[in-house]
Length: 374
Image (cartoon, rainbow, N blue to C red):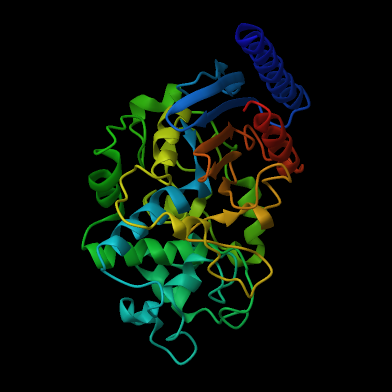
């Protein structure tokens, strides 16, 4: 009976993996993205992984592999900013309830002095969602002052507006508290301890051939910026390949709390495990990744993560206690802390041009199929 059960389980597993591959290949054929890499794991065991399509289709064709490095975009928020915040919290260097103005004096104004670090980390600080700082500032050092001067668009703690301004601010906060640049802090506290060799800000030029390409210039962002960047003349026009796609991160020398991290599926898996018990964290920080910091709001946010019960990109097959994040370039990471499960989907959906379709539909279908692996 045991051998028969194992055989049936093995056959079911192969069928589901085939379905995942077929689904991703159909999305590639539809033009949603040129390539995709996925990884599904429980604990330290990788249950399934696969590759479909190409990492680059122009100016040359390079097939995707499990070692293909992706611009993780906003996955930087939890993987870098979230992990470093959790580590410094464990060292009692600050409290989530503290006003951010305790550390960043630019926010010591009548309107903003009571905004807490928790509100900034949960996208409930009152900030506007996005600004083209590369067109508004002459120097990256001016960005924090511009954020502090920008009027709030709602009362802090009353709603959620996903905002890159929050995580640019938290990146500066981490540097202020630690006294170290963000990339060095990440290297010392995460990358070196985990022995990650294919993960970093600002990947070396010699890595280019193994990095998935992004958009042709920043055409999508150029439209988004509109009149606010009408006098800006430094738009990138060629294929963005081997450097960060996000223009604000690019302006910030490609090191920022909101975007800029590059990695591949295997090393992303090692980073993801750090948000599960038995990781770099030693205290009870794990509950902060599941705990809703803003229960009074319409959207659930924990420390740097979106909660599945409110997550339109998670789908309805992941349990509500799961948490995850996505990146504009086509990346996605979701975790089930209770079962130590990791779901990774990496695509290059902006290459060679941004196409307006519902990427979250693809993520939901992936999670639905991935759930059936277990």
